[in-house]
Length: 370
Ligand code: ACO
Image (tube, rainbow, N blue to C red; front, side):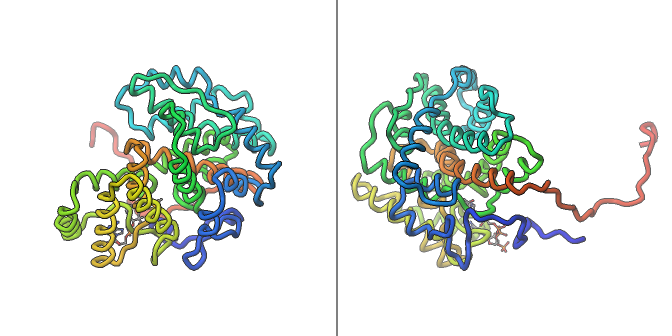
C-alpha cells in the first residue's frame, strides 16, 4: 500500500452535481460561463439540489421557503453575543452553524424530504448568521431579514441595514453563482466523509466550514487581501512579488490542484473587479491585481484562481476582509448540501487506508525504565 500525497488524481466518489473536464467547470452539465452570465444564485442552488433549472413557480416556491427560514433562532443570536469580540469570523460561523442544529427539531431526522428542507434552511440561515456576527461584534443589533429579495440583496441588507444598490447585488449574486460548487474540493469532501457515517447535515456542513477556513482553500480570499494591503501601492507590487517568489513564498490566490491552465471562474471576477473599480472611480486594487498576475504568471506559470480577484471585488463592495471566506460559505453551502443529499442517496462509509510508515515490533517500556 502506498499513499498518494494529498489524494492527488484519486477519484474518490461518483457525482452528478458538478464536473471539471478539460478545464471546463459545469454545474449539472451547464457551463459555468453560461450560468455566470445568465443565472441567479437561487436558480443555481435549485439546479444543484434538484438537478434541473427551476421554472417560475418552482423558483417562487423556493423564494417562499427561503423567506420562511432566513431569520435565525434567538438562542443563536444570544450565543453570538457571548463570543469574544476578536473571534475569528470562520470560527464564529463554524460554531454558530453547529448551534443551529440545537434549535431544529428535525436536525436528526433522516428522511430525504427532511434533509432537503434542512438544505434550504441552512442556505437561508447561513447569510443571516454571517450578517448577525458582523453587526454584533461592532456592538450593533442584528437586522431582521427582508422577504421577497434575493440572498445577495438580503445579505447586504442585513449587514448594513440599507437596501444595497443594484450593481452591488448583481456583483455579489454573480460571485455566489461562481462559488456554488466545485466537484470534490476539500470542504465538500469533508462534508461527504462526515455524513457518510450517517451523521446529520448540520455536522456535514460544520465539517465543511472547518475545511474551508484554511488558507489553502477558501481562506485564500482573505489572505489575498492581506497581501494587497501589505503591498500597499502599485509601485510596490514588483519588488514585493519578486521578493516573495525569490523566497519561495506562496502567492495567495494562485495555483490550483485541478486547473493547470487557469481557473475558468477567475476571468468573471477579474471583469467584475474592473467594472466595480471603474464605477467607484478607484481602480488601484484592480491594477495592482493585474500587475501581480502578470508577474506570478510570467515567472512561475501559475494562474489566478477563484479567490484572487474576489478580494478586490468584495473590498470594492465595502465588505470587511474577514467576511470574504464566510461569503464563500454563503455560496458553497448550496454545493455542500447538494453533495450531502447525494451521499445519503447512495451511501457507503468513506474509510480509506493509510500507508503505515512508523516503527514496527516496538515493545512497551514500563514508565520507570523510560
Ligand atoms: N505561489 C507560489 N508557488 C506556488 C503556488 C503559489 N500560489 N501554488 C503552487 N506553487 C508551487 C509550489 O510551491 C510547488 O512548487 P515546487 O514543486 O517547486 O515545490 C508547485 O507549485 C506545486 O504546488 P503544490 O502546492 O504542490 O500544489 P497543490 O496542488 O498541492 O496545491 C494549492 C494547490 C493549495 C491551491 C496551491 O496552489 C496553493 O497553495 N495556492 C495558494 C493558496 C490558494 O490560493 N488557495 C485557494 C485555492 S482555490 C480554492 O480552494 C477555492
